[in-house]
Each structure stands twice: as structure tokens, then as C-alpha cells.
Length: 464
Picture 1: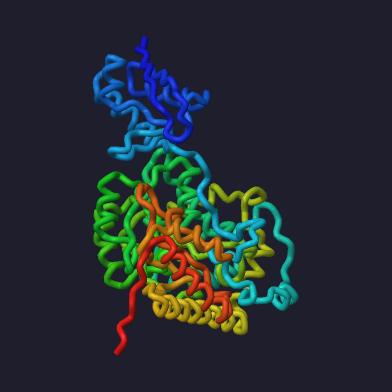
Picture 2: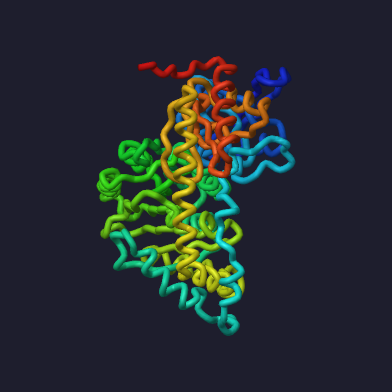
């Protein structure tokens, strides 16, 4: 029989009082009691839980028993611990997603989308496509695409000798399947911090525990990765080029440092999401060493052939490939051979490849030009690589985003991309490559004005 903990605490936002009925003698019983309270609606997102010592005294159990119960709930994403802020019920609200804000009258500069004008026309390739129908029981990878992708995926990959290919419905599908075939619920996954929204969403929905690893100008930090591995992460997801949202790309030196950190953890699944691949202005450097046992490199075509071309190629070690193949049964979840053949027709066409190269140069040039405008307005920034800019601010980004809304702009504050931080992010992610010069000039001026209105100071340029 468990004891009953009956404590009254004011709700921070509504001023109501709640009764916390928590019972149990073991860690699992206490955790189940808290879960039941959440399911009944007795505990709502943000509600505080009793301190460990107080709850242990009320229940007549050892303090370590309550610590273990709270740990189970934290790893499952049910509660969050915020140091002096105490332990509270987690907010299960979905992670923010990429894309246009539906129904907004504001000019959206936070979409993360490629420019539709730079996506190649599919019509000529569709007209050239040919081939007999594919039936149940046949190979799930179209032979022509497999031959082409073998060369594409080997480029710069130290473990290319062991390479096996899998085709999935986009990079997010690949990452979800890779995690599902290797992990169980509550397993820890190392994620870049700040992180790509889809990766946060995938890990949260899968029931895994995200362990943040800081990102600097050269990508994931070795110190942060080492700390995550010490916490027992079973998988690592990182972006070798054009990290979203920061735009960071791994340098050769940083990739070697990360390979060294991973050397003692050959069975940790390492997933490299090279989402920008053919558009990137930076070389590819892999953290996957030849001796690493569990790994995958994922390259999607959505950034350069369009999001509607929902296809990604995954190169992986043989065991991972076998497990992925079991999750891609012909007739249920395989990727259409028509889509595979269309992808091959486009990526073997010289005119399409030239258009993709021009698009990559365009994104880089437009981002660099906007950074120059911001710097001139008193907000120095770096360009990085990719579709977006990660703008440092002297004040919290949400305050700036609110001011920008008053000026007709919808921007993305950095808070949405940060894992587990209590402080407001002083970063703004902007997608500006599709703005003409006049709009870009106006946005730069409005960002500077928004910073001033939010109480921030701009950098004054010295006059020679």
C-alpha cells in the first residue's frame, strides 16, 4: 500500500489551487501515479510537482526512490526539471514545423523553403520517362537510380567500402526508420542545439530522450558530443553541411575531432543528414570513420528538386540496411518506382544539374547581400550556408519578432530551435533569399528598428 501525498500549490498562470494525490512505494508505482494524475487532468502542463525530499517524507520512502521515479518520468518526456525552477509537468504541445504560416497577412520570412522559381521544371523529364510496370516482390530500389546513387553517396564517405543503399520517402522518413530499427522508447539521442525542427519533432514523437549538443561555427562541438556519449546516448543525429538553423558546416578539422570522440563508441548509431548536398557551397566532411559499426548518411532531393519530390537516399552499414529493408516491404511502404525514375531522369540531366548549381550560388549570394545590409544597419552577422540566416541580436528574439509583426513581417525566433534552455534565445532565423533588393533593404531596416524598439543597442560603425 502506498502513502498519499496531498499538497496544495498555486498555479502560476491561473491562480487556481490543485491537490496533488501521489501514491506508491516503488519508483514505478510513484511514476504511474503521476501519469494517472496527468491523464485524469488533475495535473496540467506547467503544474509543479513536490520537491523530492518532501514527497519522500510524505510517502514514507527513501529519497532515491522518488529520484528514480522522477528520472523515469523525465526520460519519458512526462515532466521536466528546471533546477531552482523545480520539477513541472511537461508541455506536450507539438514542435513548431517548417513552412508557410497559413492565413497570415504578414510577409513570411521564416518559411525555410526553397525558392519555387529555382526548382527545375519536371515536364521534360516526365516526357522522357519510360519503363515497364513494377510488381509485388520485385526489388524496392529502381536499378537505374541505385547505380547512379552508388557514386553519389560514396563521395567523401570514408566507410564507402561497406555501403548499402535504401530509398525512403524523404529524409524525415529515413531518420524516423533509422531510429526505430535501433532504439527503444526512452533511449537517449544526441541532437544539435540549436536543432532542425523536424529532428526535434521526430525524436519527441518517437518517445526518445533528446540530449542537446552545442553547435558553433564549425558544427557540433567535440566537448558536447563527448558529454552526450557519457550520458549513454544510443544515436547521434548531425548535419555535416548547412546546419539548420545556424548554417554551420563541419570543417575537416572538426570532422576529425568528432571521429576521434566516436572512436570508442563504434556501436552508437551515427546519422548524418546532408540535406543541402548539391546546393551546398561547402565541401562534405564525414564524421563516420571506416571502423564505425552503425552509421547512415541521408541525402534528400527536396531542397533542389522540391519538397513534393519526397525521396531520400540512405547509405548505411550492411546491418542497418538489412533492418531498414525489413521496414520497407514491397506493396506497403516502398517508394514509388515512378518517383525514383523521375529523380534519376532529373539528376542525370545536364541542364537540371546546371540549374541546381545556379540555385545554390543564388541562395549564397542573396544571403550574403542581406548580411551586408544588416551589418550596415548595426547588426553584424555571418552568412553560413543553406537557405536561412541565423541572426544574433542584443535582445531576446521574441521581443524583436513581435516588433517585426507590427511592421508587417513574420519571422522565427530562435527559441523554437533550442533544446532545453530556460533563457530566451537572442537569435532570429530569417529566410530572405526570395526578397528583391527593395524588400531586403526594408526588412534590414525594420529588423534594426525592431531591435531598438525592444530596448537593444545597435553597433555604431566608426567613420574614417
